[in-house]
Length: 193
Image (cartoon, rainbow, N blue to C red):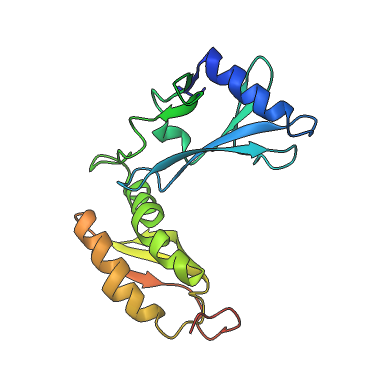
């Protein structure tokens, strides 16, 4: 179960906000954007019935349900959501001390290390082109990746692969030899270029 604490004051405040949404069964969803990087931001959003994801952790609170994003959850250790009254009326605060801490080290399985750097460093950059890359396999030190979205069929994909992705992964993970792409770039229907 999640190590996140939502104080009674925060629950009361959120319950009051949720009651004004006129949506039966509405809850909240807690997630971290770019977890494990210096740019990590912890966010709370309304979560209408059906907007939660099947892999979310469900936290049943006294008057509503909180859904914890599965990919963010490992970074939410010791997180506290609180509500404090101040001169301006009050403020919801989220402290997630581990949100920016990488969850892998050199002892982690190599596939986890690769996935971690893809999610935190490589995909956020590709997202601006509507693209992403996913880990397929590792074969004798060669990482096999699949480009998707706007990267598929993009004429720059091989440059991105060698200059950006391979360089980053080889710097971060000792023992890798290179990166290969399994994507068929002859299919250009979604290409960015």
